Length: 324
Image: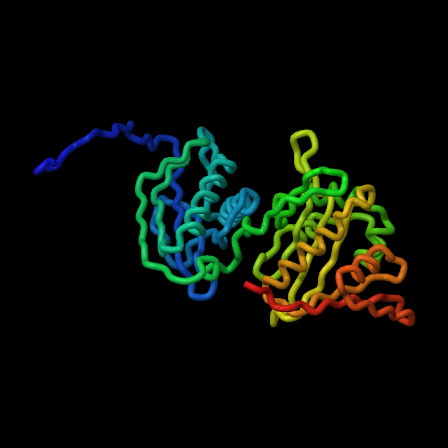
């Protein structure tokens, strides 16, 4: 055992060059209402009151981080005026995602400051980083305004044709997959689902469906692999009331992939989630002609109320509390 300081090695790094780079600043602060906030702005001077700063709530993915960078450029918080080394939006977005992951995974972090951050093309160099830690007790997700992706809810099932299928919560990145999925659903099935003729879903519609708060609603997608890419073949969704007592649910399966047991598996997945989430009742409305949904609901114990005068069928299932 060494009585004095023992040096076991040295890390030698080249001095960071500031020539032609852009100085940025990334910070994490705590808000009494929204919890952790990620701030992005110019790093050449201290942030004073009233200075433009782009703000986002973790967790971030690449799409949300990219929007944060664009927000900073639009409001003047970032000045992309370096013609020699233009700001690499993808590299900065990736760094913001890494900061977000750090905040989500480590609830002990109360403050983080990366300043200055030198941006030189795709190279991001943190010259100075300060971190504040505090002991944390309780549910780590409760401190976040938006629940992080619940990976523990993923599961793999086997369809009636023997094909394996992944059930997982929907992601913001699923927007193009969801659009492709809807394109393979017949007009009749879409009418049963949305009670209206829908010719096309806009970007805003698809963003609303994919960018959800996992604490207030849930959507599971059924995903299979085709030619090294993911394909959505079914979706189930539930939205709870403010008291987390009753919830409206819906199920939609790709029209050419029925009779594989997918609809039943998706609905059973949602029932299990709703019961574990503390919900007391699941409700839905369909049409009398939607015999497949009515038959499935009866098999799973739903109360079926056919209201011919209104042209609807009300489905309801009382949920017993989840057992340990």
